[in-house]
Image (cartoon, rainbow, N blue to C red; front, side, top):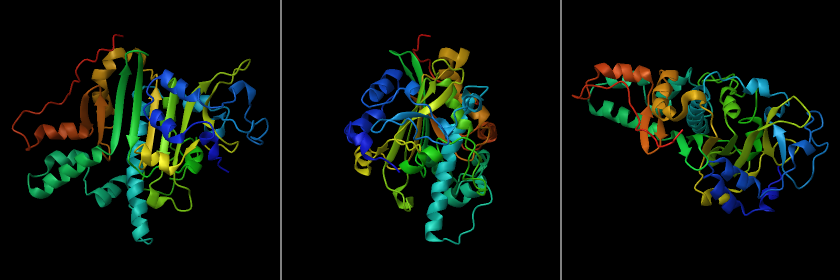
Length: 363
């Protein structure tokens, strides 16, 4: 059972969420957490069979992601820092597709499901494989298709931020997709190895675990999600929000990744719909990874991320916008970029690589 009054009994939800959505540094997160009554991780040991044992009523607790104490090995699986970002972007694409599919079912419960992600994108958005966009003629239909693809990119955003004071990189991935209700975030967005997608051929991943590897290269992560109001079903409207961090228990070797929970069953802190509306949160999901460790990339990552994302997502089913500093570029994948070398839409010779201006990160 969700405890919706726990957050409201200590902070004003509208003010809290207004600050939470702007958190982009470790001090920002720590300031938010300082407002809440949180049981230190060493004063509560999660027991899968009896999670209520030792729970302190009226306080938030740190629960293992996936409610699995030994989750560190499964989360520390990314071999390149860019891979978790790409996984999160793919999750956002799925959220946009699922939003369209569930709205289709509202109108026609008997509608057959798309047979693949690309089939879904063609059906719901009228966009072909992205590497085919440059090959379209310059007629009105083709121009409309390109404009539609550009509009879709605005609904999925990846932001790379550098804070000069904290000296931290932050990566934010935001989608305007279906979102999750607060009561289900712990069993969906924060799950490990479980799935609701195995019978959905129109989605891309299965277990939704790849993006979780971003926790391993972040000092803190936070997630905020709100279900599209027309697809709530029996769930209560509102937004769910929580923080994820790496926990190193005193006197133990089994480090793990934990998130802030409001109940022993794992529910995350919830924000009422009125507060979500006031903060401009309609529907969709945001994952923000703070203190992101790019390894030896350093300041060069601001120039390399665009090329890296196009390389890893060679021909994604949907495009997305990438923000680096004050520069914005749309990622269509290298398949699109190579295809555009022979495109007809411009008399200017195409350029395969795009360089972002140097960012004054001072690393």
